[in-house]
Length: 191
Image 1: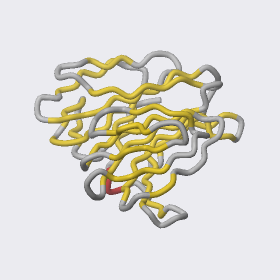
Image 2: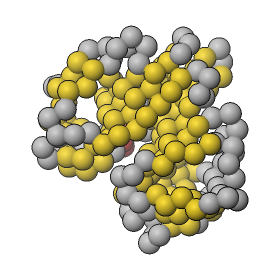
Image 3: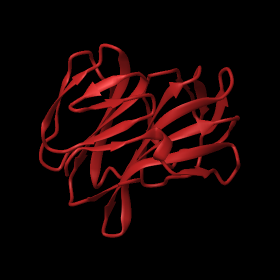
Protein backbone atom coordinates (compact mmCIF):
# COMPACT_ATOMS: atom_id res chain seq x y z
CA UNK A 1 0.00 0.00 0.00
CA UNK A 2 1.28 3.46 -0.87
CA UNK A 3 0.46 6.53 1.24
CA UNK A 4 -3.15 7.72 1.00
CA UNK A 5 -4.20 11.19 2.18
CA UNK A 6 -7.81 11.29 3.33
CA UNK A 7 -9.27 14.78 3.80
CA UNK A 8 -11.81 15.25 6.58
CA UNK A 9 -14.27 17.08 4.30
CA UNK A 10 -14.28 14.15 1.86
CA UNK A 11 -15.06 11.44 4.44
CA UNK A 12 -18.58 10.06 4.03
CA UNK A 13 -20.83 10.87 7.02
CA UNK A 14 -23.62 8.68 8.37
CA UNK A 15 -26.09 9.40 11.16
CA UNK A 16 -26.24 6.94 14.06
CA UNK A 17 -29.31 4.78 14.47
CA UNK A 18 -30.19 6.60 17.72
CA UNK A 19 -29.63 10.06 16.14
CA UNK A 20 -27.09 10.99 18.82
CA UNK A 21 -24.22 11.71 16.45
CA UNK A 22 -22.50 11.31 13.11
CA UNK A 23 -19.76 8.86 12.12
CA UNK A 24 -17.16 9.42 9.40
CA UNK A 25 -15.35 6.23 8.41
CA UNK A 26 -11.68 6.78 7.58
CA UNK A 27 -10.73 3.22 6.57
CA UNK A 28 -11.32 -0.40 7.41
CA UNK A 29 -9.68 -3.77 6.99
CA UNK A 30 -11.61 -6.83 5.83
CA UNK A 31 -10.77 -10.53 6.20
CA UNK A 32 -12.79 -13.01 4.10
CA UNK A 33 -15.75 -10.64 3.88
CA UNK A 34 -15.79 -9.73 7.58
CA UNK A 35 -14.65 -6.51 9.22
CA UNK A 36 -11.22 -7.00 10.83
CA UNK A 37 -10.89 -3.37 11.91
CA UNK A 38 -12.40 0.07 11.37
CA UNK A 39 -11.02 3.55 11.99
CA UNK A 40 -13.54 6.37 12.20
CA UNK A 41 -14.32 9.74 13.73
CA UNK A 42 -17.60 10.43 15.50
CA UNK A 43 -19.33 13.68 16.32
CA UNK A 44 -21.16 13.08 19.60
CA UNK A 45 -23.99 15.53 20.20
CA UNK A 46 -25.62 14.06 23.33
CA UNK A 47 -25.40 11.44 26.07
CA UNK A 48 -26.30 7.94 24.94
CA UNK A 49 -25.59 4.23 24.59
CA UNK A 50 -22.77 2.82 22.49
CA UNK A 51 -23.37 0.20 19.81
CA UNK A 52 -22.56 -3.43 20.60
CA UNK A 53 -19.36 -4.67 18.93
CA UNK A 54 -19.19 -8.17 20.39
CA UNK A 55 -15.93 -9.89 19.39
CA UNK A 56 -14.03 -6.63 18.95
CA UNK A 57 -11.80 -4.40 21.07
CA UNK A 58 -12.30 -0.64 21.03
CA UNK A 59 -9.95 2.29 21.57
CA UNK A 60 -11.70 5.66 21.87
CA UNK A 61 -9.80 8.97 21.96
CA UNK A 62 -11.58 12.31 22.36
CA UNK A 63 -10.00 14.71 19.84
CA UNK A 64 -12.24 17.78 20.23
CA UNK A 65 -14.30 18.87 23.22
CA UNK A 66 -14.02 18.31 26.95
CA UNK A 67 -14.36 14.55 27.17
CA UNK A 68 -16.91 12.11 28.48
CA UNK A 69 -17.46 9.42 31.07
CA UNK A 70 -18.11 5.86 29.83
CA UNK A 71 -20.41 4.04 32.24
CA UNK A 72 -20.39 0.23 32.20
CA UNK A 73 -22.18 -2.11 34.63
CA UNK A 74 -18.93 -2.43 36.64
CA UNK A 75 -17.17 0.92 36.42
CA UNK A 76 -16.95 4.44 35.04
CA UNK A 77 -14.07 5.18 32.67
CA UNK A 78 -13.08 8.81 32.19
CA UNK A 79 -12.19 9.76 28.61
CA UNK A 80 -10.58 13.22 28.69
CA UNK A 81 -9.25 14.85 25.54
CA UNK A 82 -6.27 13.03 23.92
CA UNK A 83 -6.24 10.08 26.35
CA UNK A 84 -6.94 6.75 24.56
CA UNK A 85 -9.41 4.54 26.45
CA UNK A 86 -9.53 0.81 25.67
CA UNK A 87 -12.52 -1.44 26.36
CA UNK A 88 -14.24 -4.58 25.12
CA UNK A 89 -16.71 -3.90 22.32
CA UNK A 90 -19.31 -6.17 23.95
CA UNK A 91 -19.38 -4.14 27.18
CA UNK A 92 -22.64 -2.20 27.51
CA UNK A 93 -21.54 1.45 27.61
CA UNK A 94 -23.56 4.59 28.21
CA UNK A 95 -21.65 7.81 27.64
CA UNK A 96 -22.18 11.04 29.54
CA UNK A 97 -20.64 14.13 27.96
CA UNK A 98 -18.56 16.24 30.35
CA UNK A 99 -19.33 19.66 28.85
CA UNK A 100 -21.19 19.62 25.58
CA UNK A 101 -20.64 18.03 22.17
CA UNK A 102 -17.33 16.47 21.19
CA UNK A 103 -15.57 14.51 18.49
CA UNK A 104 -13.68 11.27 19.00
CA UNK A 105 -11.45 8.90 17.07
CA UNK A 106 -12.53 5.26 17.22
CA UNK A 107 -10.47 2.20 16.47
CA UNK A 108 -12.39 -1.08 16.52
CA UNK A 109 -10.51 -4.32 15.83
CA UNK A 110 -10.90 -8.10 16.05
CA UNK A 111 -8.10 -9.25 18.39
CA UNK A 112 -8.00 -12.66 16.66
CA UNK A 113 -7.02 -10.96 13.39
CA UNK A 114 -4.92 -7.97 14.49
CA UNK A 115 -3.71 -5.83 17.35
CA UNK A 116 -4.10 -2.08 17.56
CA UNK A 117 -2.73 0.90 19.46
CA UNK A 118 -3.36 4.65 19.53
CA UNK A 119 -0.75 7.13 20.77
CA UNK A 120 0.08 10.83 20.61
CA UNK A 121 2.70 11.63 17.98
CA UNK A 122 5.84 13.16 19.45
CA UNK A 123 7.47 16.14 17.76
CA UNK A 124 10.14 15.18 15.23
CA UNK A 125 9.03 11.55 15.17
CA UNK A 126 9.78 9.19 12.32
CA UNK A 127 7.13 6.60 11.58
CA UNK A 128 8.15 3.23 10.16
CA UNK A 129 5.52 0.86 8.82
CA UNK A 130 6.66 -2.63 8.07
CA UNK A 131 5.25 -5.78 6.52
CA UNK A 132 1.53 -6.09 7.11
CA UNK A 133 1.35 -3.17 9.56
CA UNK A 134 -1.00 -0.29 8.86
CA UNK A 135 -0.11 3.13 10.23
CA UNK A 136 -2.60 5.99 10.23
CA UNK A 137 -1.61 9.51 11.25
CA UNK A 138 -4.59 11.72 12.20
CA UNK A 139 -4.13 15.48 12.58
CA UNK A 140 -6.03 16.67 15.66
CA UNK A 141 -5.10 20.37 15.50
CA UNK A 142 -2.78 22.70 13.62
CA UNK A 143 -0.98 21.74 10.40
CA UNK A 144 1.08 18.57 10.16
CA UNK A 145 3.82 18.38 7.52
CA UNK A 146 4.10 14.84 6.15
CA UNK A 147 6.24 14.05 3.09
CA UNK A 148 4.86 16.28 0.30
CA UNK A 149 1.49 16.91 1.98
CA UNK A 150 0.09 19.03 4.78
CA UNK A 151 -2.59 17.56 7.03
CA UNK A 152 -5.07 19.84 8.78
CA UNK A 153 -7.57 19.11 11.56
CA UNK A 154 -9.36 15.83 10.84
CA UNK A 155 -7.19 14.85 7.88
CA UNK A 156 -5.56 11.41 7.92
CA UNK A 157 -2.64 9.74 6.17
CA UNK A 158 -2.57 5.96 5.74
CA UNK A 159 1.10 5.08 5.42
CA UNK A 160 2.61 2.33 3.33
CA UNK A 161 5.68 0.28 4.26
CA UNK A 162 8.09 3.22 4.01
CA UNK A 163 9.59 5.42 6.69
CA UNK A 164 8.04 8.89 6.69
CA UNK A 165 9.56 11.86 8.54
CA UNK A 166 6.84 13.92 10.18
CA UNK A 167 7.05 17.53 11.35
CA UNK A 168 4.69 18.04 14.28
CA UNK A 169 6.03 21.44 15.37
CA UNK A 170 2.71 23.20 14.68
CA UNK A 171 0.29 20.31 15.21
CA UNK A 172 -1.13 17.71 17.54
CA UNK A 173 -1.58 14.29 15.96
CA UNK A 174 -2.44 10.71 16.84
CA UNK A 175 -0.77 7.60 15.46
CA UNK A 176 -2.91 4.50 14.98
CA UNK A 177 -0.91 1.31 14.50
CA UNK A 178 -2.45 -1.99 13.41
CA UNK A 179 -0.49 -5.21 13.20
CA UNK A 180 -2.24 -7.86 11.11
CA UNK A 181 -2.04 -11.50 12.13
CA UNK A 182 -3.85 -12.63 8.96
CA UNK A 183 -4.14 -11.34 5.41
CA UNK A 184 -6.46 -8.34 5.49
CA UNK A 185 -7.64 -6.12 2.65
CA UNK A 186 -7.32 -2.41 3.48
CA UNK A 187 -10.11 -0.17 2.23
CA UNK A 188 -9.75 3.64 2.60
CA UNK A 189 -13.17 5.30 2.74
CA UNK A 190 -12.24 7.43 -0.28
CA UNK A 191 -9.68 6.85 -3.04
